[in-house]
Amino acid sequence: MTRDKTSAQTEPPCANSANANPASILPTDRRISSQTLLGAAARVVIEHQGQEYLLRQTQAGKLILTK
Picture (cartoon, rainbow, N blue to C red):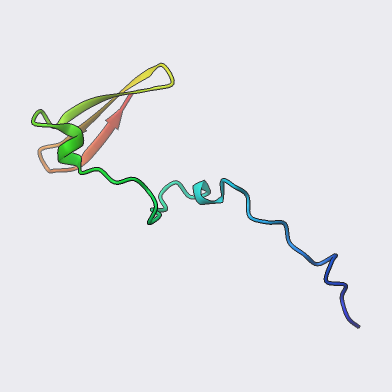
């Protein structure tokens, strides 16, 4: 028994398929060094959709984002 290929077709990938896993880093993603982003103070306020977030570097060198 053969299957009709037209009925077995899958839908094309969603335009947001790259965002399905937010941790996925793509070669086309924009890159900026944390030192450039944070500056000498090792912290920066990020405004997003009317909210403020603080991105800072700990003494251990890790990044923490808080609202």
